[in-house]
Image 1 (cartoon, helix red, strand yellow):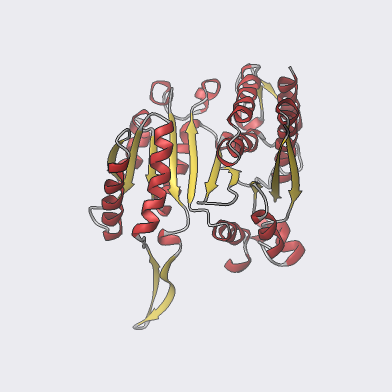
Image 2 (tube, rainbow, N blue to C red):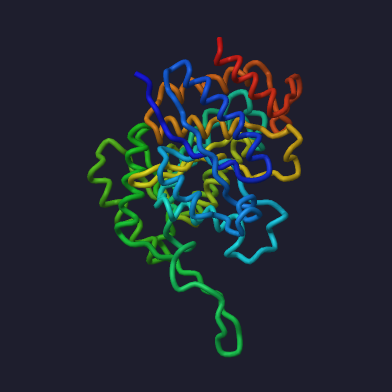
Length: 360
């Protein structure tokens, strides 16, 4: 029996439309093989939405996303919109999407692909075999805490951003992290700054209490400054990391660069119910937009994450991930991951190589 899923596509800006086109073709090819039908609806977000409507997240886009089974986002932003007021910038649309869909858990894998190990700036013996999942709380913490702003104070100015979490917010991200750790190597490291921040002390207390429900997961704690150092010193010690919004923003980017290129990394943002958003880690790369130079593999792997975590289709996800592995073994590389002896291809040709592999 054919399975049907409604997918909202948010190609966005820069290279977004190019890499989205490749991901859609790959999903269609997998759908044919596994009797899965994808109904795609495209909607504007970010800079292109600003140009069309004056709003980085039109109401119609958010409603379309809410009515879908999953959302596949590409990239937003660019130099063109950098000088706009904060409320009108493309990034504000992304924050609005996360809030509007109540996406509180961000999953950022950092996996070293053996074909690209030499792209890492760290030594082979340090990064070989690294497979980390960073679980970042996405809708609380210092990015959303109140009060916030720049105020006049006694003849001076004072900037205020409040880091705040409720126990409920900590518990729900903790539960996601423990359950992911159960499906991986069964090790969870909670990262905080409990030695100086009261909000982090609450974080540590609640995560520790949660661990009583997950006897099959080994829980450890680490201060964020030490975690940043350990990611560079010996990243293989980590399996699953859970942390707050600010710390997760920084550590997930640090973990991403262990792999040598953020052009290869997908991510997922999930809520308790409703559709998740799946997107590559990289930006819109306006300098190469429209030149067929973009690396579509992170977008394709984001589609695989969508299948695995959003649609419960692990067989389809495995098929895509195997295809990516195969084309890399065949020596195909886009410019950002090019190495001596490999064959450089553009975005379209990389997509065609994936389709050829899936057709075999």
